[in-house]
Image (cartoon, rainbow, N blue to C red; front, side):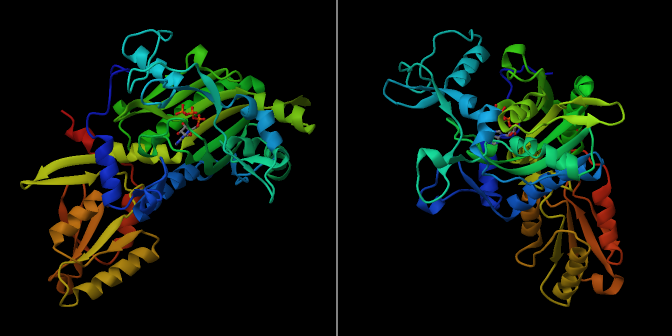
Length: 466
Ligand code: ATP
């Protein structure tokens, strides 16, 4: 494995990803016509399809491939006492330092110290502003929760917060689920939704934003089984990224050092990806003990105990939490799949995405707009769509240009209707990665594509590696 501190993904820069995302309509800077709003982004058509596929794969791994997890969609606005109990009101802070020199920029003190360590220094060495070298203010704890007010009058009595994580919505529904879902530990509750953090230093495109989507699951277990379930979940979540095509050398599990652990956690491991900014967290898998349920029991007065009728035992379950970010995962899939090569003297940019993640599965292309080709292509397009396969019909411009466009959005297959189609009932199927073109019958095309989508897949870059 490579050197942790100095490594960066050598294949693509963040600028290239941002440019492709904008050019092809994946992600746009938000409020652009008004000059943009710091580090907020809007997802365009292909971005929505890609992120939906990421979330669907997550849901599928939680709800379809196993039967010990149920779904939840809790409110973004919750009783302020939730955040008192969880510790977010008092402790969800980052240490903010401000440059007292020329540039007046604000920084996260812990990030500056970590950067110092990466350069070979010590964590406690004196630090100065990395921008202008100015002196830095003493650190001030800055709460990351966005505060707003419920009702027409804004006063202290009606402050509410945009949730900074989806997890607490799960804990406060633990008893509801226990009573109505006919589950007993070990079982999990999964949720996907928006979270909000007033980050001091957002940036690096959709890696760190102030509004983002999380995919979190709280797995409630008998206390004695916590360690073993934690280890299992670290492995399950690591494998999820691998199965979706992230290359093993670009992914690692990093156990937290003792001084990094949250006060309630007896173990946390991050799944990290080698982004163009270096190794960074994709997902954290924490053994949270019974901290959250105990806190809510104390603050709400509601018992969070589980009574096991079989053993006669009564206990507050321990919790294993895999907490992932949908936007960060989407970024990792974009980075890992980005590939440039020269084909017949021209640069080809392609997203070699796992076909199940690709926004569009099949591009349906009439070679020319004549001799019945567009009509046949439309029929094929309709048949594929009826089978639930996301397609794109494109009849404009040269076929080469149309292929290149589909390559850039990661479409795994192109189906071209040509002069021979009306005689032999066949079309040309082009493979995005091998560039192989074969003739296949129109009859049975949806089934063939569905079959391909169900196959295991690995990144073609693994074959290209020296
Ligand atoms: P970081 O150390 O990067 O701030 P964290 O450890 O605070 O992250 P968690 O609270 O564990 O993050 O959140 C779980 C996941 O949610 C993260 O692994 C990440 O994928 C995602 N996430 C957290 N904060 C953001 C953000 N500001 N923008 C995008 N995704 C985020």
